[in-house]
Length: 86
Image (cartoon, rainbow, N blue to C red; front, top):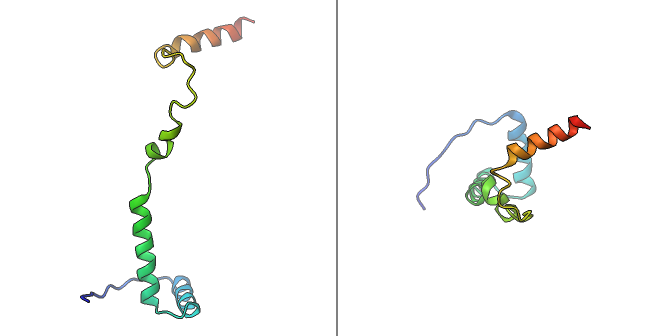
């Protein structure tokens, strides 16, 4: 296996947590860091953007009126006028 060494600066608190975790799991600090990086990269690859998350809900509760997006200003003015005329 061809591997390189990478150095990372950790805060004292993070280093202590890493040491305690590796001792509790009875593994090396290097293995803990490698597993954490693999998990991080896997999450990043599968993370969806806001469009993908909301896509199932877009248009799900339609009103049946196809002109709502083009007539919203007129409808808004009518609602405001109706509110103030009462």
